[in-house]
Length: 88
Image (tube, rainbow, N blue to C red; front, side, top):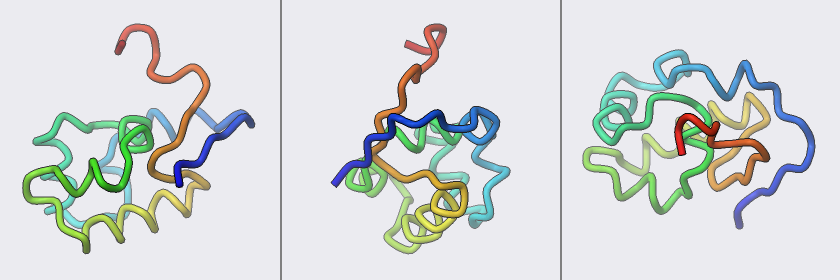
């Protein structure tokens, strides 16, 4: 079930590049190939959408889920103010 946050999320985490997460190079490459370059872009995707990315495996999903959990974030979030206007 998607998480909906109404509490302010620290923007510094959301604007971080996916390469900054503690994930495998293969997971980062698959996400980059799908145009996911920032943490906020990841958070807006559901787990199912992530698994539809070419080269992104269930193992990659688990490592990304853990990385997001460490930042108090998750897949499928609704984050007020995101995507930023310049990215809509």
